[in-house]
Image (cartoon, rainbow, N blue to C red; front, side):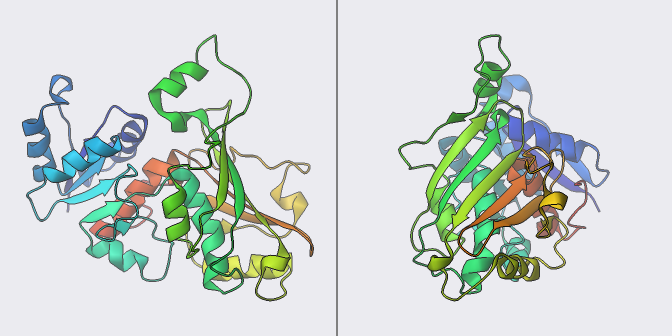
Length: 312
């Protein structure tokens, strides 16, 4: 069986990557809009409603506009913007979130794709909240370093220009990053984390670090206990790898490679530390599992095809 797919915002970083994933598939017919009609509402509406699945790779307001154009009840919308991520009428597109999440994605016609930092944070922390080890009232401190591709075309152009700054640059210093609502909502925490992201001078790759103080735990737990909770939660998940408690195996001479999962839909989660203080690090490709790969994975789940189809 074949499916028709339209990418609204096909020229953006996420849209281009989705097109690249899908162009290799024999079960997908890509509907493309002419360059001179990209802002033509009537043409966008026609393509959206002709599709089985439309990906929205647009700013929030434009994504909302596209949703308003849908009149085909069979069209599934997968929105990569932040516009609908905590909307209760939309399904969060993270299949590994909970046991029932795949069934929700399969049944839904409105799927909100997670943000890259949020995916890493939620995947690292939700199992500990679900297990009762971290009380819902815990305020987690975390940072995340990501490649500059996450900033879109203007940031890519900046970093690829002769005037670029070849140094990490912390941002969102007002501590109000746009991913905070979903980071809180889908971990089960009732307080937003203290979260500070950093843009690195490399194209893609992301590693989020969350800081854990065992005195915050509801019961005594060692790094091995934390690692076991994560391993049990993600047992059988094809894209989630909980790494062993082995510095030599998980690092390169004590250094953790942010770019190790580039080109894949894979997430590595590692636990480091001791009885007094611990780190959780979740590593992914910000354009893969952090954006386009996650969107294609949710599409696969929704359509009922092999979940890893077209992904590595």
